[in-house]
Length: 266
Image 1 (cartoon, rainbow, N blue to C red):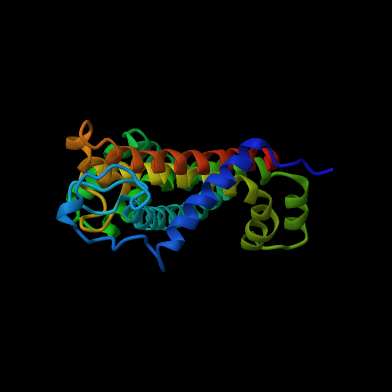
Image 2 (image 1 turned 90 degrees about the vertical axis):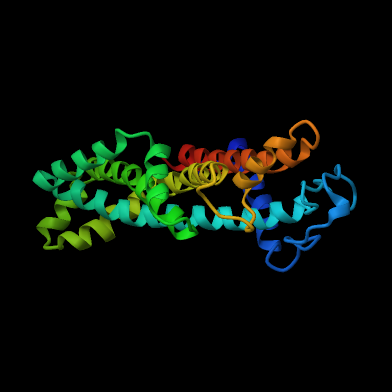
């Protein structure tokens, strides 16, 4: 009898679906033009016309939240899936063959992990020209070691099992054993890591944007919206509450969903 989805996973799925729906909807519809500045509508409190209020430039907060989510989630998706692909390939290879290659790669991974992740990302973003591609490259370097560790440790658990030895005796090649015999068994672990990685990537992108090193204006970004709202915390607190709430809900949604997947399959 299969295990049922827990409450944690269901809550996460609902939160993620809601955020994704808003972001996808922004491709075809926003309540107001995203870049429109209305001088007579600055710092308006939430209302039926502007459910999340307006900012100090008279721009509709809900519209900017929707579009900002689109860019934030896109950066997170590209980053996490890219780092998962590269990290998995490295982790599976060194875990299967071990030896000097495993030792050398893991020492490099340890060296990268010795630095605080966000500091490492800040260094790359500060050195390279500010752009969305720069953010993706910085976050890729940040997340690859984590996926490498996860897939390597999983490979070390599975590589000496009887069915792997049997496949070797029957003449199966190493590539076939890794991709056809072992990797399918590691998919639940990888899927859980992917979902949780998305929450971490969204938080990292928001942090970089908050510091002015992420997605550049006038393109909306949740982190950038938080930074712009700092000087209006007391006069227009909704400018900070709206993007802050979206970051919290999105990160929690992906985290709950990832934990739910891990508890069910791992």
